[in-house]
Length: 334
Ligand code: SF4
Image (tube, rainbow, N blue to C red; front, top):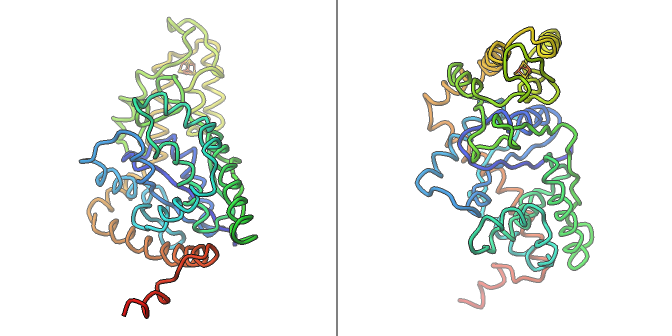
């Protein structure tokens, strides 16, 4: 069975962009693959964040993932900082990764423009990602297209370490972008993202979903109700394709092109269908909220399982790199 590693930042709210772009695929993969699903809190601290809310956001993300169908009986769900080997291997990998490779990462270039003084953590973000995946010797990394460059870097890091210390120790993971879907934000300005405030949470109540969808951007040509529109350029139509039945999608397209209905009516149908699709997840989340200690316990058990693999990988790394094992040091210390 091939092994999958995937990470998600502890943004608190799991939104439909995360769900359709990643989590739905993970839920399917856990039936056929050995999956490690990690809430990557050490990645989250590479940018400005609220210290006082990080714990809550981490737990809420775990709760969202469990509600969405991540099953700790089928996969390993854990928090990155609970398994110290992630940062240990990241340090090792910094010794085989050329700075030039990190500086040319598109995401680094974008994010570093937004930091007043560029921090080493941001530059080394893809090195930590390489450690995340290679610590478990994962073969497959489900990612969006914006992360493909980072998977290429992981492969290069694996090649460089293997060439220097032990041929074939780390596999070269493959990016799996087949099912990853890029979901546009409700403001139509780019990717759906919590930081941009353009999301719909999968655990939002029906009235919250409606409140978020009602002002969402549509085809600007539809100024008056009688103006025909082009559904293909409207994000509401794209969302209908995920949440409405094929006959409804067809109806949306026809009524949009012929001005057979207004955008508000179109959005109302969409909001109702999204609310219905996530009803079972809202129910699961309510059950989890009643037993929050259960979520902490699941994460602790996940970290324990992850550590077993991580420790074995690091033992091999240290041995192949010629680092002194603890057991050999003890007699000299007595
Ligand atoms: S009718 Fe629907 S698909 Fe057409 S522009 Fe309005 S919201 Fe978008």
